[in-house]
Image 1 (cartoon, rainbow, N blue to C red):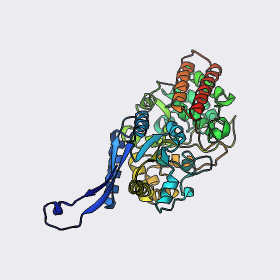
Image 2 (cartoon, rainbow, N blue to C red; image 1 turned 45 degrees about the horizontal axis):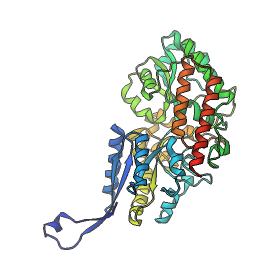
Image 3 (cartoon, helix red, strand yellow; image 1 turned 90 degrees about the vertical axis):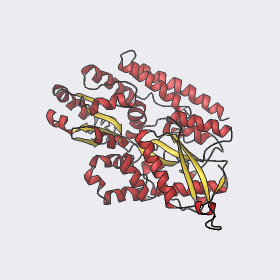
Image 4 (cartoon, one colour; image 1 turned 45 degrees about the vertical axis):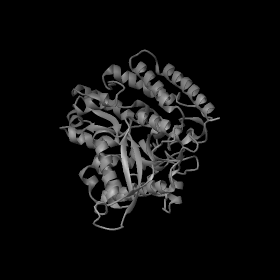
Length: 432
């Protein structure tokens, strides 16, 4: 991007001498389509209207994977955008690419902005930080897995929402008798694997879950999660749990259709559910196994962050910093939170939403934020693992085989760990 001088129309027609106004243009590649994309465009328009020094142009680049691939190719060609949205599973790839991005804390400090990482909600600030806690990416569309329940279905069955998976085992027969499958869940790699380890404060990988460097091995073949997936297979057989496919909507749609009493999905799905269902619903924390821990811990965010790409002019970096500062303000975070359902990323924004009465009107919208602020543990900040997109593919392949009865949970997790560690070793080699 180049510094661009925009000349007012009045000057062009010779009605006013001078007064040409310089504006710096920057480009933002993102992966938000549909209604979310419209909200992204609105945020950009609001930023542009809020000042007259900078102009940001959002560009939809397809899926998360397509956006990341495009950004990598553009960087190699020297044509990278100023800002790129990178999803959670791709964060390690971008952060490990030395010199490809400017850490958000560095960017803000270099351009005169105060940036206090402690102002960010704990479950948000750590995921895109380095081993010393310095934030590299700017959290954007942040969400965490929660359990939604059909309040009418649970009342019909005479049961309460479960806090633990032991609770679920007790109420599932009553829900089945009332005509409902007990539970479904989307993106098992996220809801029932990565955040399973965080919820129970179990190590997900060696070397500080990968934050300590690329010399890392996955520890997913743990007895607790093997037992959990063994239970899922048994619940599937009994009709208590249904897995409808690998697609996100495959498992959300039956809940919204009133066929499944509970669904584990994203806290960011709140708004869509409210628009589409004709039954009373609520949300509660992601269940845990009391047999594994009596002190469940917080989950961490999924979604994506914004990364400032290097190789830009000082003027454009200043524009990117100004946009990040605008984005993090409490007022704009509340706008994004209310419009999309994604959690506000700062404590100040959360408190402002509460002051405005948002959670009194929509209690389910607060559950994800509360869960992100539960007590933390040494294993709750997330993970930093290379080639993680491919590792997730291995997981979902094996999970579908467990549910289909083609393999046992014991064999599946041994396979996942073996193949994942081969991928992690290859990634380490690419880093020298």
